Length: 258
Length: 376
Image (cartoon, rainbow over all chains, first blue to last red):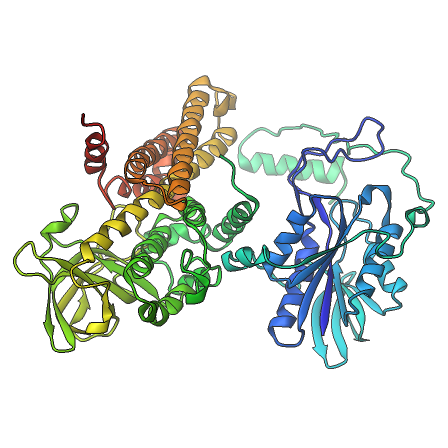
């Protein structure tokens, strides 16, 4: 059984973002990129299943520009067996186009399980995995916090507001992973050494039989701005007892949150 | 000097490992003078117990740069655990790699590289440290065995090691040739003394290893009879290159903690970072640390390329070790009264750092060694 893991490289969450002069996108120059943290959980879960002897191969799929190989190597160094890389600048497309590319790429491998992070931490769109599932006509369950294989089905716990929701899903199927499902491993030295020798299969849109013009959606970004922090900059004085009293007064009477 | 993609990935992974698995416990391990045995397995799972051991013997097949990078990251949070890793990889596995034959490597390296057990290297004696030629431990052949008698001092990992590499005199007389042997834990006659109470590196165990009529099979001799001292010199030469990475780790820890504190602590209505006296001290600490790191990268990459490193390793170790102690002292000064407290870690970095000015060649002998290369 093969497991496909959809992965996205995103700007390091510690980096300082700048908007391009046209106010329509994030300036990607000089940014450090990392794997979207939820995708680390997806890879970890796939590796655990393979290590338990229930899967033969973990294949990572990503769409990205030249340079994405570095993030792919991190996934391979965590222990994924190989990667499929659709080399295409994703900034020209949005979730619809990316999902079509990934769906076409995943189809070439025919996995029983498709995993992804529940969302990417850059645009937080939470769209791509579910769209891939629809395009491949697979059942899917999102925001999974517990995953268990039972032969030809999977029993999973989904996080919902204030509780959890258990569903059984027949395979093949797609699942998106939430934090807390596992603790992603760090790449080990032997796996870093081996990652160099693992295959990264590259596809262009033409290889996948896709036409860029048809992948562009009707959605257009009209503007982008950085969140503006309007802080009160109020500093309370006095000893700690007095400061706590003042804080409670503000929370109760001014902000009315208590 | 920039690191390639693999080494950067290794650095990030080792850093995360150290932050998650070591940093939260390092103070307690220092206080208790021990790190838990399960750390050895965890380090093994990361490939950090067989760093330069080739894949065919169960290791990671990394180079010395990989070794150095791991040491810097581990030392950043705990010198003692890092010393255990350094002695295991560099000295014990290192000697088996240099002197061992294929059978010996196959028999002993996989368990060491997996972290099923830790290794110890037994060279130093009560009266023989830098002057390794004054060794008194003796091995006498008895049929298919060698019988070893003697006492080894300051043995890192000695208390819990599964495999010991022991040097002993096998040639006649006080200056007779030296050979090395692999001695397994549990061999009758091998015992350890009480754990030494140390200034720093306290989470690693340091003991006396006593050898009383220890019989080891002849096939456990590492290398041809009488070649032990040559191999010892090679082990020390390589170790001296990478051990400077530990000093870089201590210095980096001290700088990072001092910078963090200087931004948080206010005095006279502003963070103490705003005072020029503090800024210049921090800048000097940073400059010295980076210089030490670059010297270390340079000598390690020379070792990886098979170039002679005797002088470079000596210069680097003197500079890096003395820098680490000084930078850690400066960090204590920046933290003031808090720097003197165990809760704030920097005093621990100073205690840990001091050892590198002594172990694997003192600053004094290394300066003499550098001077020797300058003689007309």
